[in-house]
Image 1 (spheres, rainbow, N blue to C red):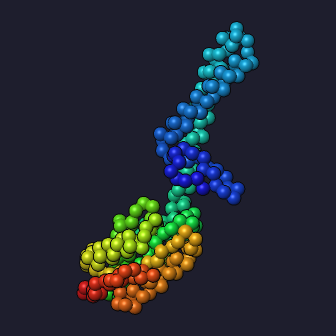
Image 2 (image 1 turned 135 degrees about the vertical axis):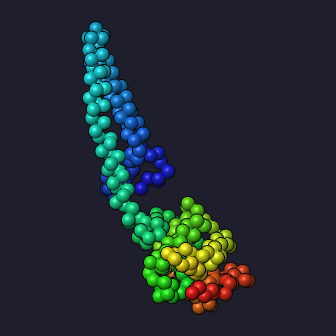
Image 3 (image 1 turned 90 degrees about the vertical axis):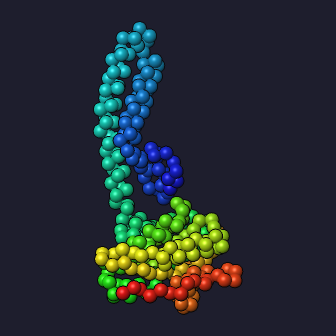
Length: 270
């Protein structure tokens, strides 16, 4: 698919025989499309008159032909372009549930793998993030409070990521993050910043404040590494972080001495 950095009015060419669509996002684009269509039609009628009519006949029919062309083109495009805009907006709305998790507004698992497939040859650092002792939160405060905790943790992960990174709700209280073009050392600092901010947060949920921690596993994805293999390596590192006491960041392979040490797990306040 053509990159989204193309202009807002563009024909998007899709592979595998899919049809192209014209993206018209705003009313300004509708007016611009009408104006360009009218201008193009006037140019065509001018060429037609110049080629097919003698000068004396051309002078006679020219004003009427131009006025008729402007009127008819405006009438047609004033109907067509708003319909194209409605179609585009409806398509975006229909695609949103596929691309975004409804609870957290981060990427869904399906959209995550779709994005990763488009960038399969890039180098990334993959992170797997798990909310520690999340079942205890649900059992103590209920699932609605648990939803608030998941939503806030997702927001912190997103706040500490860049536009080119991908944050995904991988399932339940687990998240996957791919950090674009970062070394293990850089990604470890990002992961620790996420972990520290979540651990310091007092999450307001209904009439209680809940604190929680996360465990994070990370692994480097080389340009030729399969996506699922990179996630598996990060998941293995996450398992080690949980086995080591939770509330810590562990990378696979391990970084320099001191990597993986996190603060002691905190109890969920009563």
